[in-house]
Image (tube, rainbow, N blue to C red; front, side):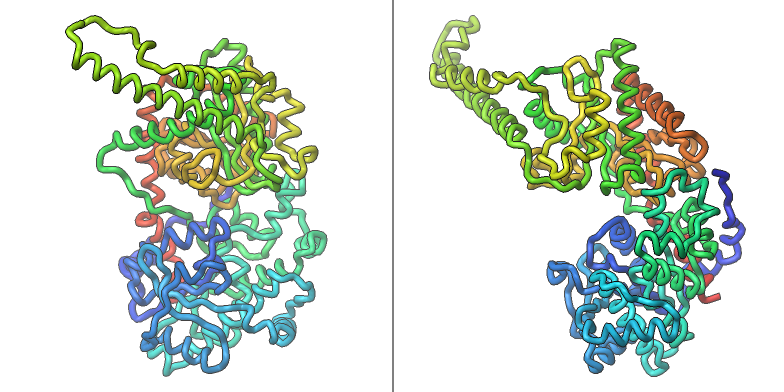
Length: 618
């Protein structure tokens, strides 16, 4: 795939003066299905950016979203102050019978927020769909509940802008609507038609059709020029969604996306080349003392050690001081997320480490969401028995400590006593029985922690079994496939996902299709080295903006120009090189990668959004 950058840097100078501060006498509204509604990566974009937007725009910034999250009342605080233009538009809609809520989202910055209940207009769905066809030739025939919610939400958002656009409501303010993704963009055609004073910026974070094609078509990028979007959208039964997405892209005054990789996809599948690229960021909080990064890594690594001992040590043990923890995580998209390439590279890494007689060990965690019946009872039992052993040893430790102190305080003998005499037979026997029952097993440590609903058809398990990567003692690379997300209430780990990440050494995310990709950036922000690919938006951006990425703890797999097996070899070589890095160098690399992440702080990247808004009104 040939890289092209159609977005000249000179554009920054054209609008630079306009973005030194927010656009005067203007209201910026940002619309997303993920406002107060955690669904996926766009939620991270919106929520993490709020603080920077409020700092720049203050109360001239407002978010619009759907009132659909079951716990919305816990994160949304209604207001009784409707004196501003936003509040007046909400009051007008409420008087018309719409179920609309005005208040503040209880996140950093506490932004003004308007929420629309799409279910409240389901009795008008027939009329809403008719108007989409009559005015914009978009047919919504499928009885899909999510699609119905989306078009109902778009109808309410369009009505909101009709009310806000009235002269007596907006009171001379310039109106900017920044709309994210097709799920929030179904109202764009009506807004463009009925409210000409609203300047629209539309951002697609990934084309819906592109995601389907990348999962199901071989050589997606090589064949991108030849796909017929209408034919393919009908094939995947997403024609209505594809038409809504195209209408939003063509109806916007400024069309943007998150990466150059996705920009080419938009050009071919949506029929419009993006005007700008808006890279995603995070709120990067750095520690005043650098060593805190290593302290936290050590703390949470100890929690992972507890899991490792319970999972593996009943069958065999290995030196945890010479063990590295790798992980990958994300939606279960085996090809798109690069799970297939990661597994292939791990098999090759296993062979390389055997050939080199390496004394290191690697435990690879695969964290994703796959259908399962329950946690494997043997895994739970092993974990529980390990905890019982831990409690027994702590009881013995306390008993020895108390009796040793009493002995030394009352005895004139300065020689070290026999500590065995300080332990009751009860604790000796209890510990012995527990250890014997725990080690009385002939089975290997399981490669999956849960009982999957489709064990025989799972592509991860099938690869591991066919490549004989089944956690044999002689294999330096061990696998833990955990088909559920990690949280503090998880019975196997008992820590939050972010803490688990900090306890690991390397995150592996060589995606084939990833319009942006937050996971490697989240690793870097936590001081954890990461692998990405140049087919992900983040990886392509980092390749051009992070000097000497590998020296700063970021490894980029060149999937845009390498075949699958060449990319697997490159990744295996990168992993093998990482395994051989001395511990003190890994610690230094931890500091470097955390410093490199600061380039992706919203305070540095929000200027791209400023430029898009400036272009919309210019």
